[in-house]
Image 1 (cartoon, rainbow, N blue to C red):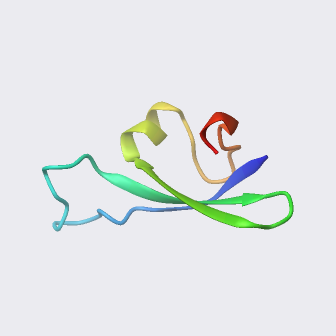
Image 2: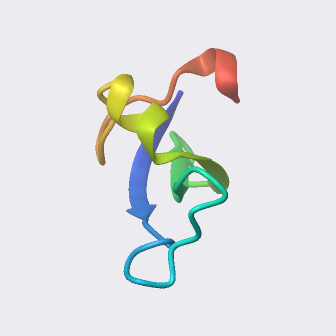
Length: 61
């Protein structure tokens, strides 16, 4: 099981591109403390109600 440790909004501010949907970098940590990173659309995170401390959907590992 992986849990969301940190969400970094790299598109924050006026430099955001209008061509692409805003993305965020998500730091995940497993039960052994191993970290991994994924990039997803910010809107997808919101639509799925995911935030720091939440369990990451296993079908997306």
